[in-house]
Each structure stands twice: as C-alpha cells, then as structure tokens.
Image (cartoon, rainbow, N blue to C red; front, side, top):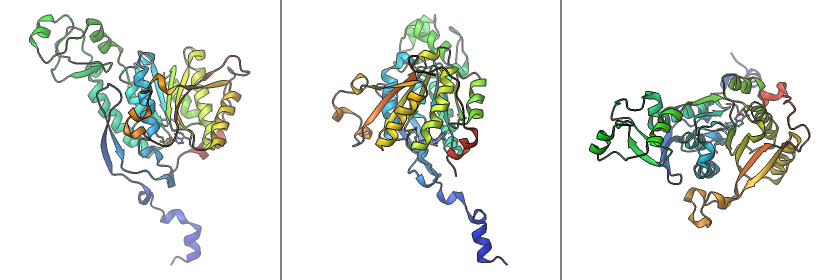
Length: 334
Ligand SMILES: C[S@@+](CC[C@H](N)C(=O)[O-])C[C@H]1O[C@@H](n2cnc3c(N)ncnc32)[C@H](O)[C@@H]1O
C-alpha cells in the first residue's frame, strides 16, 4: 500500500503531460502581401504552463513574414535558419518561397511535431518542382504547379523552350525563360530540426550538416530575460560560421513586454560584439497602421530588429563560450 508520504516523494509517477497539452489543430490560411496564401496547422490555444507558447502563431510572426515578403530580394538564393519557429515557422515558410534552403527550428519537441507537418505540406504545395527534379524542356506531370517567387503561377507541364505547348495552354501563365529556369534550379531544401539555444551540441550538429546561413529569422523569441544569453550564444555561433560573417544578420521580430528584457537584449548583444538596429515599419508595411492586417491591430509595439556582428566592437569575432551545464535548464519542458 502507498502512503501519502510516498506519493509526495514521487510526484512524477502521477504526472500525465497530456493533461496540459492541446493536440487539436486547426488549419489557418495566412495572407502575406501579394503572395499565395500560406496554410498552416496551429493549435487553437497555447498553454504557457509548460511553455507551449509555440503552439500558436503570434502576431509578430505575421509581421516578420510581411518583412520577408517585402525584402524578398535579400532572400533569393540564400540559406536561412529560423530560430524558435513554433508550430508554424511562418516567416521561414514565407522565406522558402524565395530562398534556396530553409531550416525551421525549435527546442520543443511537441511544437516540432506540428512544425514538421507544416513543412512537409508546404514542400508539397510550393516546392514540388525541385522535388520532381525536372529539367528545362522535359515533359512533366500537369499536376506540378508552383509559385515562382510569389509572382506568377504557372503550369510546369509547359517546359522551357516548349513554345507550342505554352501557346496551346490557355491556363498557363507565360513567364520568362529565366524565371522558369530559376524556379527549377534555385529551390533547395526546406527542413526542420531541433535547435536548442545555448546548447553547443545542438548548433554544432546543424552547422556540421552544412547549414551556414547568412540570414537568421526569429519571431517572439525574446520573451524571457533568461533566454537572451543562450539565444545570442547560438546566434553568434551561426554568424561566425556564415560564409561572410560581417554580413550575417538576424532579423528579429520583437515585442517589448518588459523594458528590463529589452535593455538586457541590447546590452548583451553589444557584449557579444553585435549591434542592434530597428527596421522602420514604413519600409515594409503600409504607412497607416489602420491598413495593416487585422491580426496586427494590437496595442503592443511590433518591431523588426536587425542584429549583426559589429567589427567596431571589441571581441566581435571571438569564439562563443557556451555555458554547457546550464543549456538544458533553458529547454522548454513538458
Ligand atoms: C512565443 S513562441 C514564438 C513562436 C513563433 N516564432 C511565433 O512567433 O509564432 C517562442 C518559441 O521559442 C521556443 N523556445 C523557447 N525556448 C527555447 C530554447 N531554449 N531553444 C529553442 N527554442 C526555444 C518555444 O518552443 C516557442 O516555440
């Protein structure tokens, strides 16, 4: 027989995580600028008790996606990693319309389950041509349709150089030979990985696999002051492994929920040899806020910050020292 004392001593025996996890998903279509809508599976609610904050799409994620769409030229042919992507990785999925390779990551395995589903479905909708590996001029299945840089939907059954088919197919949108060739040859990988901030092994594994991006994305990943340092450790490690470290950049969708956290972010970034700049809203959003999408009509100030190594700061190129013993303390548990 178990005494009350025994029950208190071993609470884990009676803990069922499923009580706190919302596994019912709904499909939401996000309209980002002029792009074909992005469908994603999300949870109808998030539970902060076990930091399931990544189960929903936060407004700043939509805001950062607008930034990505507006600056699409920056992303063309690039490798991109999104950090703390949550279940949807919306900015990363939008970047994948333009970039070559995109890796969407998170540290929470429950969130990653939905993220994997969203990535697989997005690959199926927007990146089928690469998966099919068709060559210009090669006849392909009519079902392979894609969006080329979000500008023109065309029928991939019309190959480059196949002028006759193009003329006979009224549903096909005539796009330039260059655009078709780009679509076929510039699309690469769209994948997910576990990437826990402040954990050296986690980020090394990603880099050793060949992920060395110039551009990082992150939306609402500076929520708690304790996460700032591990996040910056991972960011700086990735910057130092980028092909051109001085041009490597993190575009951070940021909501200031506490001035102390904001001040710490700026101070810690500087201590890591990085500078932080605000990207003016007007450069990627309608000037009048009442014209912004309804999801962005929030009382909170939404910002995109651009964070990069600053060669004028001492130690900007010094290697990252990870505090290994604490890395897993920051894991989002469940
Ligand atoms: C507020 S949610 C933002 C999710 C998504 N980016 C958005 O804006 O909708 C914060 C995300 O950061 C992830 N996260 C928190 N701590 C982390 C850590 N130490 N390493 C990796 N990811 C972490 C959480 O799992 C969660 O998905």
